[in-house]
Length: 288
Image (cartoon, rainbow, N blue to C red):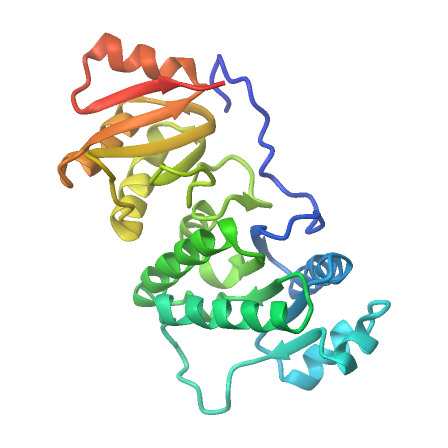
């Protein structure tokens, strides 16, 4: 339930996968694979319209993936011309593969540069990551991977749509993975992702109340955003509510790294909480 004083709508909530953004990083959870396919087609068709090379990654074989995309106007020709690529796990791959966060982002960076050199405006990927999130070890690696992807896409022409089957993974796992994306089709959840402005360690949005503390602390530990110049700057233009436990979690993360937490937000309640309770090691700076 929204708290009194909320002023911003949840603009990050997506009803479709469309949106003219060469830097999008979207999380899409689904119950029916057919639903994801519809949204993946939207997302990739938008990329073609923007002049990007697009890639579809899924559990089916390459021929099945290509056939599914071929139903979209212009996709068949784009597949033949190299503007559309499809990929699936190699035969004999481990049943529970653990993603290499830095290695995978480096591969995306290389593919993005290849797309630019070939005359495209960037790279756009729609990927079903369900098979990469079935065990705790997989989820831990995937959270780090998603954060690195997010950091890369802030200033490079790379966009990604990451899909997860909630019927196979469960609500808790999907909640973790959704939270590290700036955009999602899942309402009512805070987001902790790469900052979209210089000088900030991380960006925070949504509502942080009593039910979010454990997840916030876990994500801070997993992603480990670092302070700079003695300050752990959290940019939060779309933060609608944060209680003192959330503020203390930010302060503790900063303190453990020898820094002061600085929350830059338009959420006026945050400053009042810090002042009233005299919370240590955290400062709130107002933005508009």
